[in-house]
Length: 258
Image 1 (cartoon, helix red, strand yellow):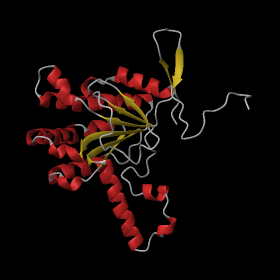
Image 2 (cartoon, rainbow, N blue to C red):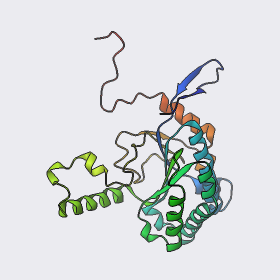
Image 3 (tube, helix red, strand yellow):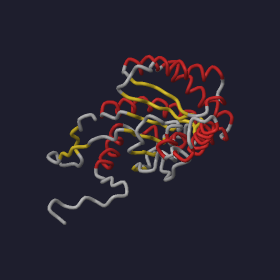
Image 4 (cartoon, helix red, strand yellow):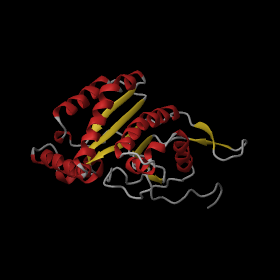
C-alpha cells in the first residue's frame, strides 16, 4: 500500500490528518450535458469538457496513491440516446485512444476496457486492443474504462461462462463459491472498489458494478463531472477517510473495554 499523505481537512492550518486514499476508486462521470446547458452551450461541449477532465482526475488519483481507477464511460443503456450524441461519444473515445495513449504510457498507466465490445465499430475495437497492448507492462495506475457495460450484463455473462465450465467438466457445481463466481466477472483479479464517486447530483448506481459494490463506500456530489477537480476529489477522499468500514462486524470497542 502507498504511504498515506498529509492533507488539511478543515480551514485550520494546524489541523492535519492522515488520509490513506482508497486503493480502488470507481467513478460514475455524470453531468456533462447539464454542465453545458447551464452555460448555454451545446451538449457536445459538455462531453468534450468531460473527456478532458478525465485526464486531470486520473493524474490526481495517481499522484495521491490510488492504485486502481475504474470509470463508467458508456453504459449498455447509452445506446438509447439520440444517434448524434452516440456518434459524438464514440468519436471522443477514438480521440482519446488516438491522441492520449502515448501520454498514458509515459506516465506508467495501464489501460484496459471492460464491457461488451462487439457492438462497437471494428476500428474502435482495434484501437482499444492496441491501447491495452501498448500499456500492458505499466503498473503505476491501473485505469479501467467500462464501455457498453452494465452490472446485470456482467453478472449474466459470468453466469454463462461458469455454466460452460460446468458443462465441460472443469467445475463441480457443488464447489462453486462467491469467490469462484467472481473469477468470471469483468474486474476479476482486481480488488473490489473501496469508494465510488458519482457526480452530477444523482443518487443511484445506474447498473454499474452491482456485484463488486457489495461493501463499497459511496460519495455523491452535485458537481457536474467537468467541474470535478482535484480539490473536490480531496473532499471525497477526506469523507472516505472519516468512515469506519466494518464489513458487517461491530465497531471496534475502545481499548480496555469489555
